[in-house]
Amino acid sequence: MHKFTKALAAIAVAAVMSHSAMAENMKLGFLVKQPEEPWFQTEWRFADKAGKDMGFDVIKIAVPDGEKTLNAIDSLAASGAKGFVICTPDPKLGSAIVAKARSYDMKVMAVDDQFVDAKGKPMVNVPIVMMAATQLGQRAGQEEFKEMTKRGWKVADTGVMAITANELDTARRRTTGAMDALKAAGIPDKQIYQVPTKSNDIPGAFDAGNSLLVQHPGVKHWLIVGMNDNTVLGGVRATEGQGFKAPDVIGVGINGVDAVNELSKNESTGFYGSLLPSPDVHGYKSIQMMHDWVTKGVEPPKFTEVTDVVLITRDNFKEELKKKGL
Ligand code: GLA
Image (cartoon, rainbow, N blue to C red; front, side, top):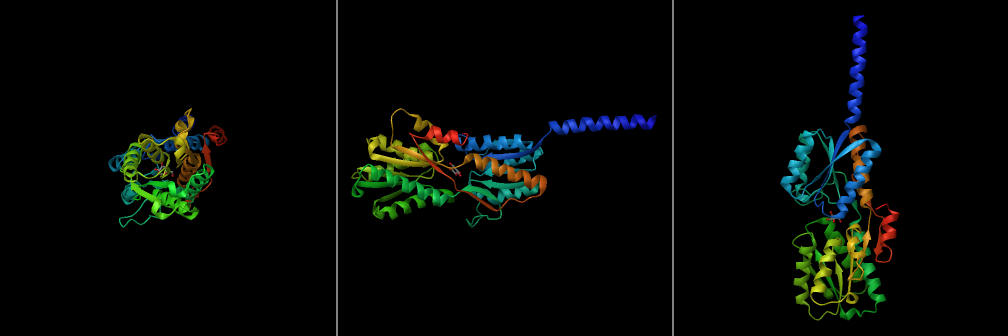
């Protein structure tokens, strides 16, 4: 009798436990540097979708600086997370992030921006999912040249405003790719002007663009190069401020989802279009890899490059976003 009650109790406990185990999903973190960018919101959305599909919870934390990053890892550990995916606010935090994760026995992988070590070398041992930066940059440059040819601009009247952020390797590779493509297409080197931005947002790029424009008053038409939509948008706003009209400016951004507001405007602007990669894939795939790593011990590939991309303009952006479920 006693044995029987004990067995019953054990069953009851097991039932409660499995119930709570069901309610208490495994937790994984997804940390991003700039949650105000639709790019990162999209990654979060699709990481959540992966969590739903595979039965884990995604703890999403904004990490705009180093201190918040390290605090976020502490709080992930406190909530029992076994690993996290991160787009770091500063690649140089890589070693500190890895050390902290290790101290909690948490797994870590990067998305979008690769960690670098103290010497500035990429930390290739930390798995990363990122876009094909050089290739996308080149495509942006090619699309700009195609459009300027269509508009019948003379090369001699055209200048390139390249707003750079070279301390971020993915940014450097994109803008270099775009400038190289423009050179290859026939824009002379001396007509390609570079200016660094102080911050990776529209106001930073706007200031950079303005300071560049005042130095080159003779240029009639501008091509604008930048690492993402916000950078190019800042440059476009600067040309508008200095009196350039939409037909004399061509900017092609990168990210796509960050260009929706601009492309939805009734009137066309100097922002011609954007290359839309796959923030959905970045978000879903990276956290799925983390999940498989934690639950099945399957280590993610060290380097996953996402290459598919489509040019969205005012004419096709709704359709293209819909095709991707964005
Ligand atoms: C960097 C940029 C983001 C976005 C991602 C995509 O992190 O800052 O805007 O372009 O790369 O990988």
